[in-house]
Image 1: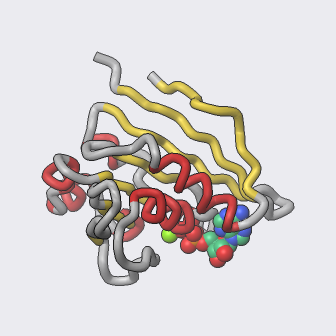
Image 2 (image 1 turned 120 degrees about the vertical axis):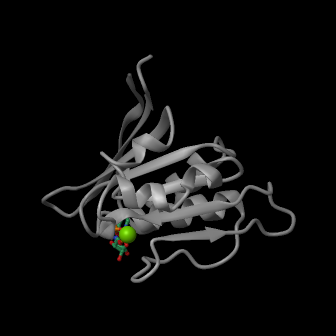
Length: 151
Ligand SMILES: Nc1ncnc2c1ncn2[C@@H]1O[C@H](COP(=O)(O)OP(=O)(O)O)[C@@H](O)[C@H]1O
Ligand SMILES: [Mg+2]
């Protein structure tokens, strides 16, 4: 079951995409999975920066070249929820995703997976899907869905 949480949002600049991430973080807690889709340069990493800011976790959020998953620890005075940032672009498939033991991380953290659509769903029976688009005029838009496995 997929439910669109809000109408398509226009994101004129990176600050707007980061603000969306920050706003979404307010409703996220341990066990929540965020799957990010969209082409290269759409703003997936920028949105994760916003999640990190909203949760109050340490460390710069970057597009890791060699690291597939990075854990950001909560800063003192924050809500105390870690963020695990995964870039699945170079993952060979589901078996390699399983090797990351993200289900263990999900017990205590928010897990955000770039390029995760089609593979990260196996980590949880429900997730938040953020689809980022890049229009021909270069304006970014986003749709946010709550996806739940039919049972
Ligand atoms: N509205 C926008 N939202 C997000 N990024 C934008 C936007 N407009 C321009 N940009 C730029 O596009 C790039 C997006 O990069 P990034 O978040 O790493 O993309 P992705 O992770 O989807 O490949 C950044 O350089 C950012 O400054
Ligand atoms: Mg990225």
